Amino acid sequence: MSIRVIRKNLPGALLGLCAASAFGFAAPALAQDPGTGLPPVPQQAVDVSDQQIETFAKAQERVVEIGQKWNQQVQEQGEPSPEDIRKARESAHQEMVIAVEAVGMSVEDYNRIAMAVQGDPDLQKRVQSAR
Image (tube, rainbow, N blue to C red):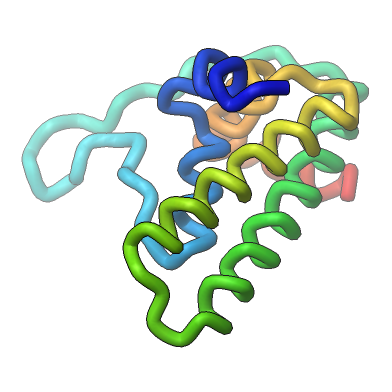
């Protein structure tokens, strides 16, 4: 799988946010800041089967492990250069894509469910139960 294919499939994807957060960078908020006076962006209900939940939970577990591994490698470098961090992010991102697809889930489905889980306590419980 080439980097070009990965980038084509993942513009703005949550996997990138996972990789960024693994390196100590805050992920952007998905809803409006309550201090701005604007209402939060409503979350749409997503219908997710039990099989999809199980697959998502496996993929998410692996994505977190990959993020932690790459974060540790960067921290062990002491003071990595911006280029080192960029390369580590790209490598982590590629591994995350492979991990998601290896459990039989598309990156698009993973991202859709990940977005839904953030705003749906019942869905969060289902994912926790599947672990």
